[in-house]
Amino acid sequence: MPDPMPSPSVQGSVRHRVALIAGEASGDLLGADLAHGLRRLLPGVELAGVAGPAMRRAGVTAWHDCESLAVMGLAEVLAHLPRLLRLRRTLARQLMDWQPDLVVGIDAPDFNLGLEARLKRQGVRTAHYVSPSVWAWRASRAARIGRSCDRVLCLFPMEPPIYADYGVDARFVGHPLAQRFAMRPDRAAARARLGLPEGARWMALLPGSRRGELRRLVAPFLHAAALVRRTFPEFAVLVPVTGPRSRAVFEQLLRHTLASAPARGAPDRASASELLDLQARLRVVERDSHTVLEAAEIGLIASGTAALEAMLARLPMVVGYRIAPLTHALVRGLRLMRTHVYSLPNILAGRELVRECMQGDCEPSTLAAALLELLCDPQAPERLLPEYDRLHRSLHAPEPMAAAQALVELLERGR
Image (cartoon, rainbow, N blue to C red; front, top):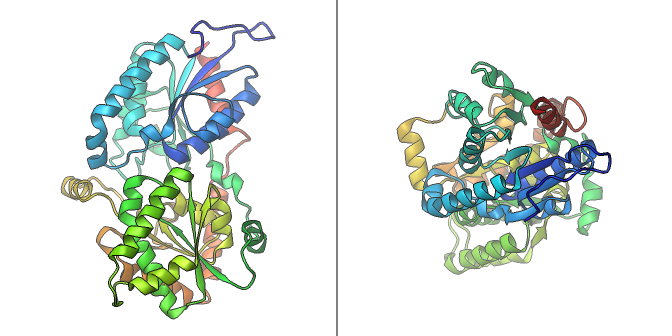
């Protein structure tokens, strides 16, 4: 761990220390963008915390890997709770020894908000980057979030007004993904970058990045793709994964899906031979989901950031998702959801812009029927494009490096 005493910068001013605590792959990418911005605005800044490969490349010293926080859902959090509590206690001690000027929790609210609250009570300035979904789950949580951190950095423009109702300092800083995708993606160029043969048709399958997501979604997604190939056998499949670990999990689940497939196909399931044919036309791509989404003609996407990426890539899609049965029962029983749509494109649009097949509807036959409906409607991409464009523009940052700038302002206010 770095020496806990702050050291002067070459200009003679106090060198800032900022801790970044990121959870899972999407938080790692956000943290990397934030780290680049902070290093530009605060030359000599020291960055450390919980990081993944992108953050490490951006100059963040990783005390722990961000995959240690990659847990989603009430049931899953309960299963990992003892380990997460131990990690949070360890991390709190490390942070107090390091004496940071600012601690920024990046997503992972179940872990980070408690850590931020503890540090804030001890006089440490804190911020939270990526607002929890207060527009979907009890808006009153905004007040508790405000008690945990000094400022909330929001990715979506509808979030700061909710916090304002509770007197919480929240800033819309734009979504970094809006900058990464061109307003008109070049599909031919994307296919060339992936070395895909000309004339083929490609479907993107994105069944998530967490182990729990993959276990629940890989089989129905593969069966759905194979069912679509009964009508459109010319389709091949691209599956982007976040790295070797998620690739190994996906390939293990692919083998299990093949081994458990029936000998004869049915309207709601593909046969073993159909899945073998699909496997022969399937390509796994590591760490390049953006190019995959730009190269594909249609997508079957897990709800979450991947659906937002598909929208920004101008990809017609069907969104499918399942959560753990216990989590689903708790959500339904406690009536925790405030929204009738679940995927980010639909939440931003305020209506079902793209088809959602959630929980019990996330079955191969339902997913395949929704995909076929899109493929058989040649006007579908043209109808989606104007709304995709509008939503893309709404996510652009109000100024360059807005997230880093909001943190620098917080540091200056603290001084």
